[in-house]
Length: 186
Image (cartoon, rainbow, N blue to C red):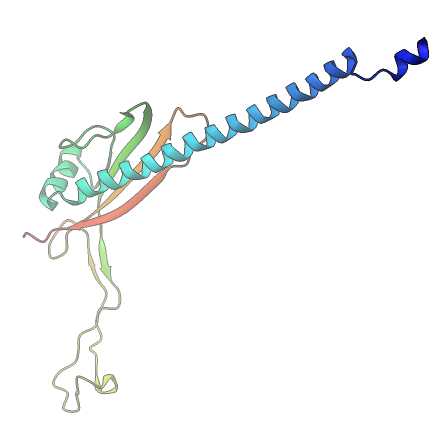
């Protein structure tokens, strides 16, 4: 009678429990991978949105007239200032909310000094001068020209905008862009 019970086909409770434990372990592992992928997707979305905010703020600042930007620096009392509050309707700050996400958005304005180290004038009269032949060109010796970024003839403001997602699940990178606005009006 015992030999018949051993030959009987089927699975035991121990085999069912072991298979169930393997299934549960695999399911939890897969859930961890999916969760990790979701966090990466959320971080990627926030970084793309940060770049879009960066482009938007930079476009708005570079579309402003030199005189407006210069007046902000004059009001701030210096040649360089980092704004972390709204200016002229451009939203800046340490906690800028876009939908459910929060970003740190700053803009730095700086009067940019200009230096022309290798600016050289052609020396005239030069009887052998031919415009199409550089070997006939003669240059005057000239000292470097430097302009402080405030006085004419060259007034330039450097604009730096930085955006960083804050409060996320991962340590996300900061994005920054630089552009220049020249005084072409005076």
